[in-house]
Image 1: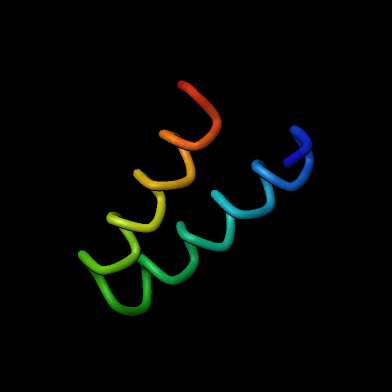
Image 2: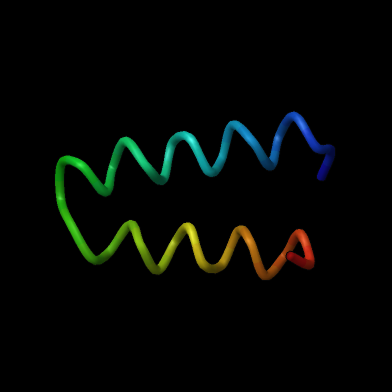
Amino acid sequence: MTMGQATRAVDHANTISTLSGSGALNLRTDVRNDHGT
């Protein structure tokens, strides 16, 4: 994925996190791991 897609995915995860809590934190971690950070 490109940098822009990764950023968008993290932003989306942050939005979900605000709404639903810990499930989205797992998603954000997965995105970061996929991006290698």
